[in-house]
Image (cartoon, rainbow, N blue to C red; front, side):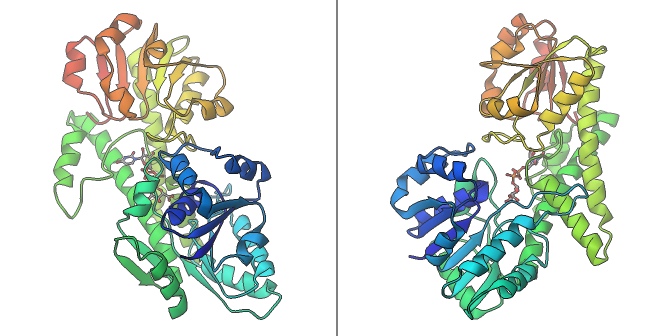
Length: 428
Ligand code: UGA
C-alpha cells in the first residue's frame, strides 16, 4: 500500500486516482478548483466516463479530495502531476500549470518524494520540473522526478488502466524505479524502464503515430472516392498485415478530442524548437482539417442548397462513450453548416449538455427519431452503439428527404440504398 497524491483532478487524475485506490493504495486527489472538489466529495463528477462514478464510490475509504497541494504532498510518498497542458495559439504546450504545481510541491516537501509527470508533456519537461523544485525547495530534502505517461482512452479508461499494453517508467535513479515498479506490480503488463526524456517522447510519438495512421487512412479514403473503391475493404486488407495492424484505420471525419490535435501540434512545435522540422506532422494536421471540409462538401453535394434545410446531426462527442466535445469534428462541422444557413437538429446520448455551451441555435432532441423527424438529411458524426440499430424504415417515413451521410461508415450502403436512401459514406 502506498500513499499517493494526484495533483489535477481532471480526466486523467480522477481515473488514475480511483484505479490506484482500487489497487489498495491511499490516494489524495487535489485540484485548485474548490467547487470541483466540493462536487467530488458529493460524488458528482465533472464528466462522464463509464464505471468511474461507481469505482470512486466503491473506494471512498481510500480516496480523499482536497484543494490543498500542501496537504496532499505532505501525506504522500508518490506525487503524480496530472494537470492540464493545453495548446497555446502557436501550437506549443502551455506548461504554466505544471510549473506552478512544481513550485508548490517544492514548498510543501517534508520528506522524500517521488514526483511523477503523468500529463502529456513535451520532452525535457522532467528536467524543468526538477530544476523548478530544486530552485524553490526550502529544506535540504531528497526527491526524484520520473515520467510515467498515461495511455488511457476516454470511454474505456478504467479497462485501459487495469489492462494496458505497456507501462512506461522514465527514471533517473534505482530508488524511483523500485517505487514505481512496486506500485504497478498488481498490473499484468510489460514494464519498460527508460530515461525520463525517452519516456516523454514515447507518449508524444505514440499519439502522433496513431494520428498519422488516421490521417493516412483518410487520405486513402479520398483516393477511394476518386476511383470508386471501398476504404473499409482497403483498410481490412492493409490491417491483415500484422506489421500494419487493424486498429486506427477507420476513415471518418478526422481525429478530435483533447489529445491527438493538441499532441500533434505540441510534438511538431517542440521538434522545431529543438531544430528538427517534423513536416510529416504538419501534413497529418492538414489532412485532418481538410477531412472536415470534405464532410461539408458531401452535405452540399447531397442537398445542393444548404440554406434553410434541416440537418439532423446524430452524435456530438468526438467519439462514443464520452460526453467530451473538445475538438470534436461534429462541433466544427455544425458551425460551418449553420454559417451556410442550415437549421440543425441534434441528438447525442451524453454530450448535449456540454454542447449547449458552445453551439447556439440548435434544436436538441430527446432521441434519434425526434431528431430525424422532418429533416432533409441525416449526418451521423459519432459511432455510438445506439446509432447502429436504427429502424431505417421508420426513419424514411418520418424524414423529409431520405439522405444519409455516414461519416463513420457504420451502415451497410446496399441495404440503405435498397430502402430508398441516398447514402454517402467516407471513402466508399
Ligand atoms: C488517445 C489515445 O488513444 C490514448 O492512448 C491516450 O492516452 C489519450 O489519447 C491521451 O493522450 O490522453 P482518446 O483521445 O481518448 O485517446 O481517443 P482515441 O480513441 O484515441 O480517438 C481519438 C480520435 O481519433 C477520435 O476522434 C476518434 O474518432 C478518432 N479515430 C480513432 C478515427 O478517426 N479513426 C480511428 O481508426 C481511430
